[in-house]
Length: 112
Length: 112
Image (tube, rainbow over all chains, first blue to last red; front, top):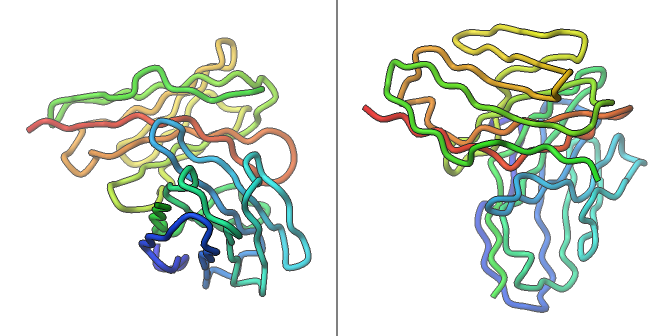
């Protein structure tokens, strides 16, 4: 979905490095989410934000931080990457009162 | 904790046949359910949704059935096509906010 973009699409890094994943949306949605996808585990929520001043932890927030720089931008950071953070990362948006979430194309992160 | 799970990790069907993908959920308070389709290398895409006050909802070639008695959700795809090959996820929403809990996914393979 071109309305939700993620950069980079692929990233290989080393243990201990700081990594930032960017998400931008042109949908005008207030709510944004970061998910992690591992094989056999589906999508798990890392952090979510219901507006620029609102940040909330999801079920697996340890080792991650986020920044909502503007309505359209939501960044995910790994302060010190570790190999078990190797996964696919997806950003999503939604707009109340709707519940449907619109996903970006994903970022494949490999931590060596 | 609550969980959303799928009965079968992989489903193979012949082109033109109907496909049925199942999902079990355990939170009786869930009030909204969504089916997503994820093609290789892409983010999940919305297929169809259903609220807990409904038993059935139809879209174009897809039908979602909800059985609240046994906490079961299914996605039926009519006249399955090669382009339907993907991983299908069910997701549930419980309570306020737009947080979704995702199942682990079913890989649908369409054989020519």
